[in-house]
Length: 154
Ligand SMILES: [Zn+2]
Image (cartoon, rainbow, N blue to C red; front, side, top):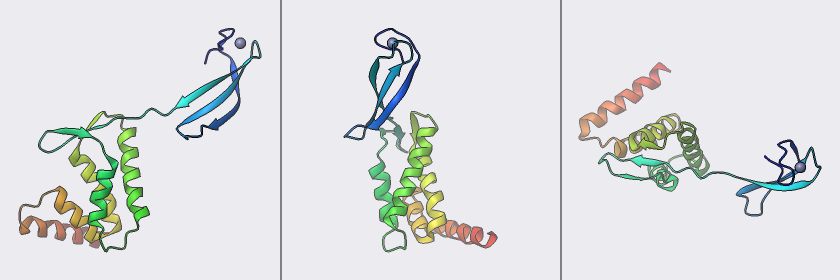
């Protein structure tokens, strides 16, 4: 960060705090050369992620939409809203850390499913049935058997 007075690049932070809106960090810096002070703002870049759906159409990643799907699957199940939000947070974090600009909706679905599988079987199967669009009872049953098998092997 260049000093606006003498262009020196050596400065130290003397104070940093969140702005009132909490969307930026305000830092007071002191130039090591001319000792004058200046302020910088550090903003979190909003990351835009595009989701490619099964029908090849694209839309912006929408965490509310993911959360809604989870809430629906967890109806009357012993999963707290906090746990549901934690799933979305985790999915969001991994997506953003992957640095991809575009992901397939299937990937998001699989990530959510992996979390639900550990939390609640019924919620998992409900979510999976929507996401994977089980064509018939047969494939649904296969998935159930697969879960039961996995549980036994644990
Ligand atoms: Zn300076």
